[in-house]
Length: 242
Ligand SMILES: Nc1ncnc2c1ncn2[C@@H]1O[C@H](COP(=O)(O)OP(=O)(O)OP(=O)(O)O)[C@@H](O)[C@H]1O
Image 1 (cartoon, protein in one colour):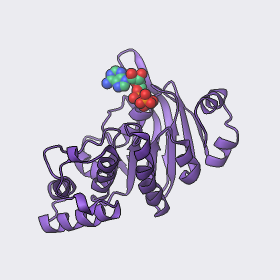
Image 2 (tube, rainbow, N blue to C red):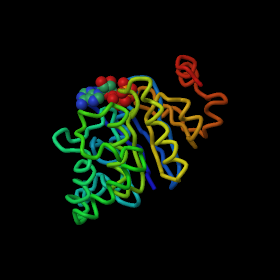
Image 3 (cartoon, rainbow, N blue to C red):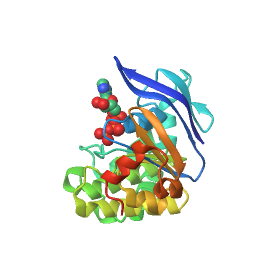
Image 4 (cartoon, protein in one colour):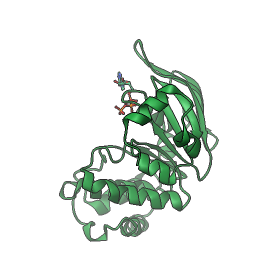
């Protein structure tokens, strides 16, 4: 469903991605981890064209991401993305946040979009907050809204870029619970996270990145059993593995 072949990218002299290749099949949950600055966020953002690449190619459901003929807004609707800092529209209430892209990008009638939004808000346990503005919600609640907003587009896959790293510790689980449920429902997911508990629970595979390279791309049990590379072993020993 998602394929990256030999993807490279530089910022000036700095090589942020170097020959990255991997693929994600339908229903697979892939966790991307690695030290800070290793290129994880950049990698995941190349998949929906938020970060252009210098060489290599990426396809999503058969569509080449960097082709000039690709309709990027539609591609981004198909591949939902959830960011570290939620990125909700601050001037719109939650109901409107959920409806906007459905109306603008998918051309859904307003009533259908509102109805779909309401159903998803219920799914993430936030029906009571539909009329509030993002600033009136906690970080965990805002992130759950952001997930619902992405799901409202009926994505074929979801990308998560450190979705819990801006949250207070007591809010992390409410977001992870929604993600676990999504994974168990069969959603194809690529998740940049340091939450190794989540990885152990629901990931199929773990990608370990270091200095812009995919150093390991392994079955979860293999990865946690004993990563092959020394760099991954060092990384794992530094972070808490629950
Ligand atoms: N727009 C940019 N211009 C120049 N350098 C950038 C830009 N965006 C990212 N970088 C650099 O590229 C490297 C990789 O960044 P990226 O955010 O992909 O890493 P990461 O592995 O997700 O890190 P973290 O876990 O800290 O978020 C970092 O060294 C960063 O400073």
